[in-house]
Length: 628
View 1 (tube, rainbow, N blue to C red):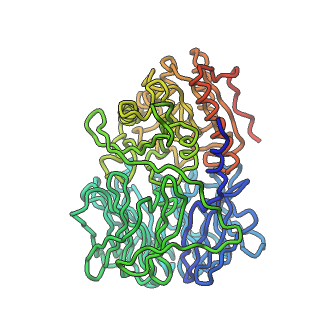
View 2 (cartoon, one colour):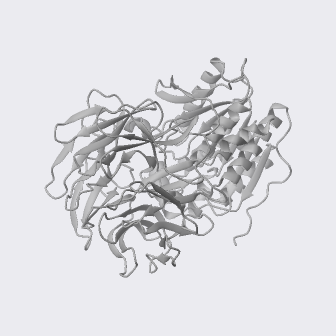
View 3 (cartoon, one colour):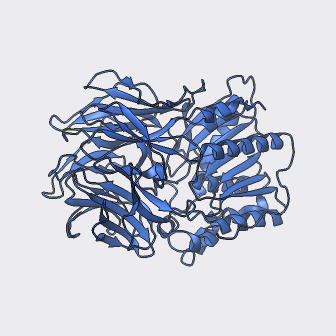
């Protein structure tokens, strides 16, 4: 196998841009660097981009302070995702812990006021889900604004720092259908709650960027599909963007700087189309743009989106665009109807153009019960007949694979291996029913969708029947293991990264945020719903596994803990299975270009071995390394 596939990992691209909340037009960029992603601050007005040297904590979820003089981010231990938010100045001065009095916590939201030093932190610890108001210089002790034992995420702060909002489930405990609760940021006094009833979740996106304006851009689902809404928690008024002519989700992303317009993306079976809504006229306009993805939702994180298009400080639309074969690019739309213009952030070490790749096409399939599911797929450019194919399953489950740049996908295709990515039930941006389609019977609907995808890929000539491999990270790794157990004979191998393999063994070792999530998804604790935990656990099916299994797991993972992965691998080995378990020093989301290249090289070698009939196992599975 040629090593030319490495060029897709070596082009050192921008991974994301996050716009600052302050009055300056600043973008915090994340660049693909080694040994870990690197931050850079883009001063758009000045036309300057400064790479930031030093340890800023978790670069992937960092935010700039309102004045642009520092970065706020979580610092944890070995990627465990449990720690404190610190302020790190750009001038090299010492970092400051903003919450030194608090126990270590999982970060589920971070926001700053547009003016002033206020910082809002959504933290999850053994004490529950909490909303804390801190100051950038830690000159004042954090103030507790909200606390609950029920899931509560995504705290956002008004432009003037006087109001705070958080997505809550107190109105419907144990069910992830949020309401938006607004409180005073001075003392936590409740102001108002917006809910569309037990069946209609509401989520906060962002307060108006105008100081003194209490309105919040939220996402509602009155029709079963996402729609933008502007809610005033002071007088209770709301403006709903109904868009009855659109089928699918219309996802709210941002306000214009004068709070007169809204940016949203219509998602129709995975395809993105950008729109702008004029609050004064009530008109929804399509924004011209090339094909690709314009945002990527996240879950169980500090931000609603991994990256997203947004407005610039002067009111232009700043489109962030990717495609499976095209890395992140910035496009500017100056006024309604204008064509997008490429924007190149200045940088002395500007990323080299990515090598030519292969785009993926979107297909809609019908699952076992007739539910439509969306699949991305491509054949290797030089393929003349069906061959090996890798089916990728995203994590979450409430995430989604969008049409974004994938070095791994391009590397597979460049070496003659087909590639597909399935948005199974549980994925977001396909409406509420689809997102909740896995609830109550975790793993059942998803494996039906996986089976449908594999049979379609074989029937359509994308893959040889005996050479389909399944892979994924986190929940996608879980589904990879579950699929080879529940669907024996369908796969030639499973390549699982940080998978959940034994829900019962994992539960006591999970961080508190994940425990709450899985109580909701599985209907209680392992003691309260043992049959559901057992049925959903891949370890329950090791006797039926016929394909080789590779597991790459993190030693300090608090989402899918290490011990449960070892228990699965040992049980599969005892059942006579071909299993390979390999550990790395890090946490659930530990990443670097070197690690990505090494992981892909390992998977490519295993795929080739399986095609040649060579076993993967190299001996007894190793136990997790002892904690440092």
